[in-house]
Image 1: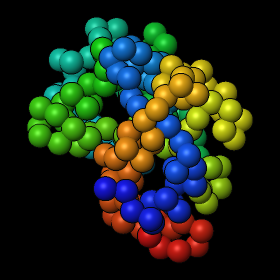
Image 2: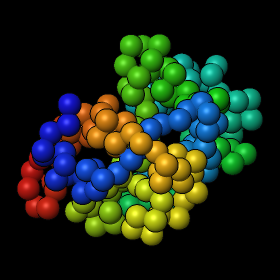
Image 3: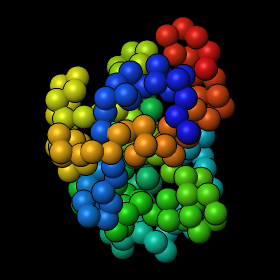
Length: 183
């Protein structure tokens, strides 16, 4: 259920439209996906690599064993996920981190929070969350799910109910602030 707090937390939630169209899109949000990872996310993935390897693409396993799953590159002071052959190292007909979580009864147990929240994003200074939409705030990433928003009828507050609930809980757990106020 969407609350008035979420409407103010996600600035364009009332007018945004979104419906995840996986597998129709092929999981293109994972193409060249380099989310920044928090330290606890890196540690969680490291502890569970044996669970993920059988689900990974063979070349991704080779890269994992040779170089690891994080790079020296950073986004917003977070190390980024490795990309293999143009896809996130953990992409294989969808997100294998999510598949492993689903098998354990909690679909987002291993998935980085920035991946879970997509297309909800935070502005550069961390003051506002918003739903990425074609043309909104200069959105340039050409993805099927955000390109088609002009014809999409599903309100984001409905299409992103699970992600909004996750955002609310993640913010509580990590003590993030929004506009100087603890959430």
